[in-house]
Image 1 (cartoon, helix red, strand yellow):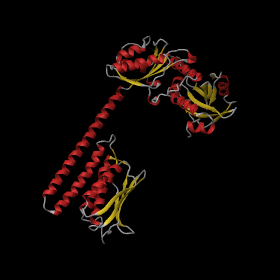
Image 2 (cartoon, rainbow, N blue to C red):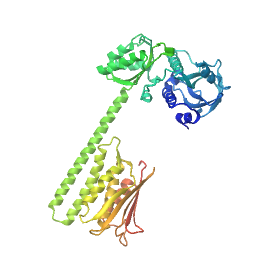
Image 3 (spheres, rainbow, N blue to C red):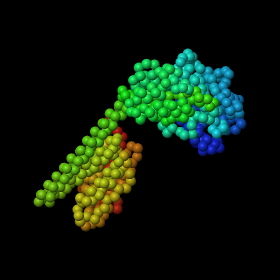
Image 4 (cartoon, rainbow, N blue to C red):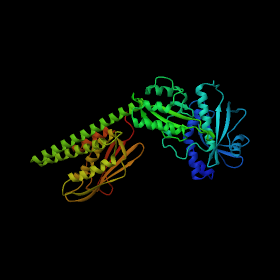
Length: 492
């Protein structure tokens, strides 16, 4: 489906500023839809008779009037004359009688979207009348707030030109809504809003209470208390505010957002949206503590592995057996490879590893532990990408063993050469080819029957940990290729 910007660019000549204003309307209109118990459709004129729907919102507080997707469809003025009337008369126009749509009675209103005294689009507010509604204080307050905000859209004063960057994470109507009169006194508080204030420490009803000083008295941090109270007062003075989170003296965390109500320029109070996020913040803190603990464990494992590697190096310097020194050097390489993975995980927040970063650090290390007379270079070609932690350690171990195997067995002393680690990644597989231009595989070589410890380790890791496949083959132009395929899907 085309986006709002795409449709406006293709079918209108609106300026960039006008398009930005319509984007602001769409960012805010879920609030309008929920307060109105109605669907909202945004229409732009194609000519004198035809309108195109460029955006659509459905309420979460009532049944939708449009279960079908309307975006991209057109309507003629004969079918919806209020759209043209709203533009020409520059006011909200309402149908006298409901219309039937897909077997459902629907009442439609057309709201001109004004910017800089120019009507740039029309909102259609369509209410499903199939479900009878009994007037209640909640419904009356919701509809009253919606009527004021819709009038402000028609006036060109809502949304403001300074957008709130956190509209999508702000409290919603169902989270808790409070209506204030022009003096700042509460005239209505929804049950969820009242519950949030009870949790903050206010035991009685909110109606009749001046909200700004009350809220200030409940919040523990003096700076936050002053800031929340100031934003509520600013909304009463006509200034919108972004969301703000504050914690009460009792430890309850609540999100606030205040919206001014000034239909036709007259002060009509404000709407305050609030949401109790106490449990969410407790879970966040628990997760942060858990993540920090896991990262600390990886850090300590890395340090311990580095200590083991240092002890192995010390042992290697004290032994007189060349064979023992080589075996200890291989062990140092393996331990160091694992330590690099844990070092990366100690800085990760989601137990995932950037394998390119690790491989690029392992390659120089492998060159350093290779024979000093070797003139072989190693380079990486292609991205490994991000992999889960459970794949990272065995993958790095396999790669280091295969590259080290090429160092040791593909080239004679002093021979020049190049080992290439080539990676290709799809949604399902990670394919790695480690190729060298050395002497090639010996006659009768079998990966299954080899007695080389490194290749035995590789086979075990590929089959049991990675659940992948590995093969060694001769290159057509000389040398050897190790072909590794690893599934990236989550293991069960």
